[in-house]
Image (tube, rainbow, N blue to C red; front, side, top):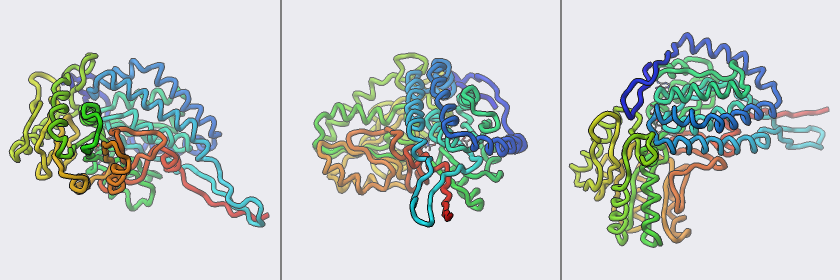
Amino acid sequence: MQIINPATEEVIQEVAEDTPETVAGKYQLLKEGQKHWAAKPLEQRIGAIEKFYALLDERKDELAATLTLEVGKPLQQSYNELNGARKRLEYFIKNAARWLAEEWITEEDATREKIVYEPLGVIANISAWNYPYLVGVNVFVPALIGGNAVLYKPSEYATLTGLHIRQLLYRSGIPENVFQAVTGKGPAGEALLDLPLNGYFFTGSYRTGKHIAEQTAGKLVPVQLELGGKDPLYVMDDVDDVNAVAEAALEGAVYNAGQSCCAVERIYVQENIYNKFVETFVALAKKLVTGNPMDKKTDIGPVSRKEQLKFLAGQVEDARQKGGSIMSGGAEPKGKGYFFEPTVVTNANHGMKLMTDESFGPVIGIQKVKDDDEAVQLMKDTPYGLTAAVYSKSFDRAEKVMKQMDTGTVYWNCCDRVSAGLPWSGRKNSGLGATLSYHGIRAFVQPKAYHMRG
Ligand code: NAD
């Protein structure tokens, strides 16, 4: 398999792909190792993650450079991702013991009762490329701390990062028979579905997630899905600082070239401030620098996958044909690399694909709304349910909107953020189950009820 630099289209490296046979061999290794790992004291498992935490910092220059090289995100954003991953590790290191400890329910009666949390066993962590460290640590860290062995399948677009993660975990004291990486494309992931694993934890597209859920349903093991979104942001007319809101919304839309599961994907603005907001937003968007992600002044790097360019151009053209005004961007810069200029489409409406299908790129539609009711109706008009953001001076007013959202996360005066202490979960086509917070620690263990007499 060739690893391609999306900024230059050059082949960086070739990597061997796993086959169903090699994947089955890795599973056998883990099946044996998991028992020994689970028998180790919890502090020892947490201690290994502490070493991993330190190594992520010690090796950050090399790790950030590799990440930018293979996925194309601006170098500073690669450093930010590594820092963000370490913050999540801090949460798990501090909180895992509390949520994995046995719980006494009845201690003094003739029958004593307690709950003990046991690992699931060998689990699959099938991962995405857009934030390989962040979406990876959400799964393999609490899984390892909980005593599981992990078959980790990094995305084919973040393979080198996946191999770095493997190497650093081994250096941290995680045994080879407890963590194995599976390299390759869809078929390598498919091979995991044929194995009798004890849980499937997937981050990626709705299409693949649904396929995995269907394929593994008969196994009756936990299946968690962290999928895509079409996340709305609504600006009410009482906001104090339109410039600050426009800046935040734009960053939410184009950070990582718009390739975030919780990226702002569509914006609604109340009619009284629509013109002012659009003018500010477009002016800011025009200042963004698209180019070499290794260059410090670059805001927008290439998108990671070539086929996305055609998809984005199609969404913009569809919007143009349906009356949208292309206020900035709209075209691929010429030359090598998978670049797409940040594109703002105003006069958007829900007849346009741009407002209904996940874009996963630096394009954004802005639609005018009359009032909160119209905004709510449009925000809810989606098969996805990951996040929704509201900007307003009034919490009460914003809360009325947030309460009506069928999403796992709502934001007031912020957007496009994830916190380790809060559950990360999607509703409807955005997923099933939660990572992070205590939910994301307990997701990797199963309760055993003890009834004890004598
Ligand atoms: P994808 O579905 O194309 O691939 C995800 C992973 O699945 C990859 O490792 C891939 O090799 C593997 N895969 C592909 N076919 C498979 C099969 N048949 N069986 C098993 N595995 C298979 O998604 P992607 O392009 O890597 O990620 C982008 C999507 O992920 C976007 O929709 C984005 O919103 C979503 N995402 C969601 C979250 C979240 O937390 N909700 C986080 C990041 C990304």
